Length: 575
Image (cartoon, rainbow, N blue to C red; front, top):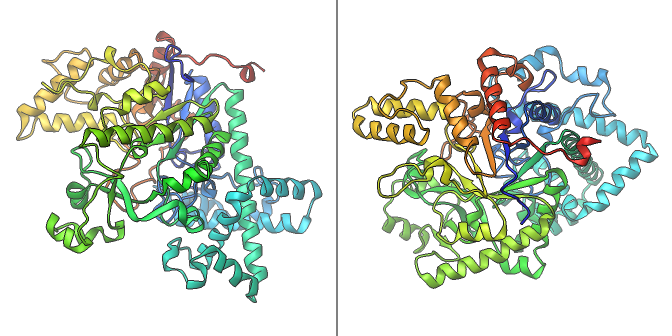
């Protein structure tokens, strides 16, 4: 067992894009992550968790990346201090104070931020290419050789995305480019061959620099005794370099997602049919024939940067809720009955694949196959701690299996209920081998959650709302007959105290729940620019000096010390 649940820790979850520092370009970056590590060290926080940092597509979702390995250039620090071939003059020719000010107003302006960072990186690449410093050229060549399995197809794919006006939807590309072999043959004969090859080299260069920066982040975490926890989604975008280049590893006939559930009801389609994420299913027999090389590579590259990782939607390894249509067609099915949907799809409806758990023999088979996949993930992960996101419609066999493998699951009080009276399970009964938290990036923050309960309590269905508030007060060991009408500092402290005093190996808070704010980073089922773009109002350095938040942070640190959750010093930190 890699995780020792008796050696407790505390942590925070902060999406990289949400962080700020004085020199950022409208989005959190590797410099901001280093400052977050410093924040953790100052306050005895042992784990810093992020969302996936792979390159995203047009929806900017870190859970729909266009590569299972390539890092997102948007999250790089692109300044003369961070990129050696970028002079101050060249930097300021692109980034003026007016531009910086505009980028830092409101949510992340992805299109503009990405364009400006690539403009700066292209300048740096051109200088690198012209200088041809022998030592730098050698380091670049070594990176390319070490990473050629994923880097070559990714750089070609990324070049073709540019060739198609930024669209990664390869099914709509010019016919000559929809297949890697055809694309290579086309480029070899093209009068623009040199331009194609230079752009391919540019995208390899960007990944080299991205991995250099994140390796430096890892080193900084080691020196400050903070464990970085990354995130590996179960799926990868249908419109990714992986699917385009290795189509035999994927089943494109089905689109993965999650069944309807009471908690996430973002829009009429999600309420009726569930969440259609659009990720293709895996052709597992093909993966097995290659000794799961694609998965081993994915895990290996993650653990090169992060000490530990979370598996998003671990349930997918056992069975995945699948749609016989892609998300672009969701609108066609929103108003249809099941019979009408069947007629439209040729007889298929959303369902669990490869099979449901309804029959005991099918459940046994799903459990057996899932165990094989997870043992492979563990084998590829080395010494990394693994946290499996086991939320949603969870088969009974999943959590016992995770514990037997030494993987931590999730313990979220709002979902841990006694079925007979809907009361919260006592905090002292929470599973020790688990990540205890009040919510993930998908859930509403504590403050918003409590304000909604108060509104329910005082609404037309007030009696039910009153019961739910009472259940919560009992869980928090507060007066059930006199619950507060607002999210008070005392109530906030009770939330923190209850979590940190629980048996959970890792007690972790969303940064918004530590600060007591209502920002939400993602709302499943909701489209638009609101998701994956909300940023903190200031840097963590500034927030901890703000009286509005300083007491919450201080309370968290005091509770960490009282519950013996301080990180134990490592050799790297001592040095």
